[in-house]
Each structure stands twice: as C-alpha cells, then as structure tokens.
Length: 454
Image (tube, helix red, strand yellow):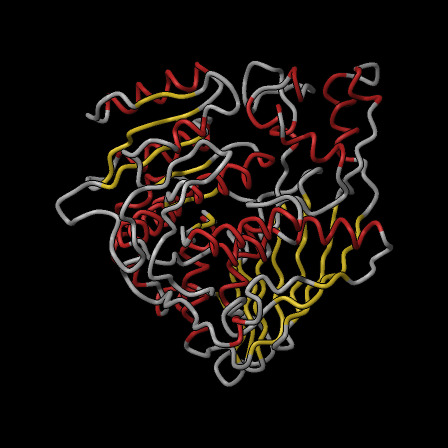
C-alpha cells in the first residue's frame, strides 16, 4: 500500500474542481528526456522567489504558472522569469482559493509550495489530488490530522510529496551522514539537534521592510511577521522542528527500519518577545499588552524503536547566534558540529580524552554531491543547500519516483509540533507518535543518500 503504485487513479476529485493529469503512471517519468518539466510555484514571497530563481537557473525546467495573493510579489516574480529568458507565466491570485485554478492546469507537472504554514497541508493535499508532483516547504503540517492528511492523500492518489528540508543537504551534515553510514561512530545511541536562532527581527518589523526594526506583526506587519508571529502568540509548542530533526532522522533511518515512538516536551516561561517589543517600541505599544503563549525555550526528547534518544531544542525568541546544535553519539565515538563548533572524538583514533578538529574528517568524508556540484551550488542560497534540495525535487519529479524525503517523513517530522504542544499542556506527559507508515517502516529500505546524483 505504501510502495510505488502501478497506476494513478483517473477518477475526478469531486467537489475540489481539480482535474488529474491524464496518463500519469508510477514507474514512468513525467517527461521525456528531450522535454522540460513544467513547474508551478504557489507562494512567491521571499522564500518562494528564492525557489523560483533556482528553478529558472535550470535548463530542464520551465515555470509555467505562479500564484500569490500579493500582486507586487507576482510582478517581481514575472520580472525574474522574463529576465531568465522564459515566457511570462500564467498568474493566479485573485483570492485565497485561486491556487486551485493553477493546479487544474494541464501544463503543470510539478508544484512548489512556499506559503504561510496554515496553508501548507491543504495546498499539498489539493496538489497531490490534482496529480502533481508536490514540493512542500517546512514545516509540512500543524496538527496530527494534517500529518495524516498528507500520508492518506499520497496513498490514495499515488502522487508523491517531497518535504523541502534544505538542511539535510548542508555540507557538514552530509559528511557526517557519510560517516554514520560508514560506521565511524559505531552503533548509534543519541542525537541532539534543534533550531536556535534569534528570529525577533523576523517576527516583528516596521510594516515596510521584511527584516526591519519595529514591533509590528499580523495585519500591520510585512512578510513573515504577517503570519508567523501569530503561532507564538497562540501555541506553546516547537513550531519549527524539521531543520534539526530532518538530518538526524535520516541518520537514524526513521521510517526505514526505525521510527519515532514517543515524545516528552517542556517549555520555559516566555519573556523574550515581550521584552523585544518594550525595548523596541516602549511599554505603551499595544503589542506590549499581549501575552505570548509560547515558551522561550522548548526542549523535546524523542525515543526511537531502535533504542536511540533525540533531544530537540527550539529557541528563537531571545538573543542567540544561528545554531542547529548537532550531536551524534555512538558506541565508538561522537561529534558536536555546527557552523561555529566542529569537533569529534573517536575511540582508538583521537588521542587521550579530548576533542579534535573535524577539518580532516570533513575532507575525508566529503559527500559525493558536494564534490560534484560544490563550486556551482554556492550561489543558490543558504550556502548552496537550496540548490541540492531543489535538484533532488526536480530529478525525482522527472522520474516520478519517491523522493529522498517523502510524505511519511513530512508527517513524522512535523508531528513534533502538535505532540510537543500536548506534552507541555500535560506537564511533560509522554505522547505516542503515530506510525504513519502503518507498520511498513520495518521493511522499508533506507534511501541511498551516498551518491552524486540527488
């Protein structure tokens, strides 16, 4: 039920007003080698435009349609498309439901979704129902019901979903993954990861500049502050877990011989956002009267079926340099690595009980993808990782095969948000992870990450 299907249902999706692509079958590519894959982009804000630019750099892609309810962003996107030498794309955005008309287009093979979080699942579900190969920005879902919606729709339609987690393609992350696959650390025991990054200048601005100084959000904000901050106001949860958890989940073979079993979460008090508003706009600013529900630091511990533990930290409401805080501990050794800390200790190799720098290790275990594309990928955004995640999406879509990070991964990784919320509400009570694979994780084979294609 969860493996590649031999066919895609041809029946109409009633009530949605969306037609399925004709003659689209699993095991056969979406396009011929001489054709270009036709892509639609839903959401062309800052993140969506970044994806758009990377798509336009490819010789095997034509962007046929775009969608956004902000006409200014449509105009910017069209300008990028024309400057890249492509024809002006069909544009949709007359209302919040107009994306469905984009999905109904026969001249679209694949769709990239980069919209506010509350739209992710519903748009991805509609995209899969329309027979489109779907790429979805993180996080993929906000509730357990939405997690199941992604999995169920994939299974019912046979359409593939890829969660566009770019951190999985960081050079150091892929090098450590290569080390894990070559058993450098021995049998795996424990991981740490998370998202620690001062986002106060993202959650608030002056309503004119996306990352400008200011204390506005919601209707008076711009870019991410228009929607992202509302989650901090209303939810005490790790609302953004996948940047750290995605790479660790791949190292632990989650959904492919291993799975998440349970989670416990705790949250500190929340003072950072209020302090920022007062420091920026004064204690009489209307937003200074609000009480934000989200704790400043949220710590979740996950247990896996293979006996490993994973600690995930969410810390974005206070001063903190960017850090995902990766740690991989095995019976033979361990590594702590991030942009600012890269150290390793391997028993029998590292002298004494200290650490050694990882430069020589990164060179030895540098991933084939970075060896092949490293010099040309760096302009793609986020240090090059945006090139690799989009490359994996397009190459998988061209062949119409399961992507490296699929619907089951999107569900499992995103489930941390609702489960952490439930655990915090219940004084750290353990929460069981649903088995989104319905038992097939036992026999599913890990994706072959150590190759130079995608």
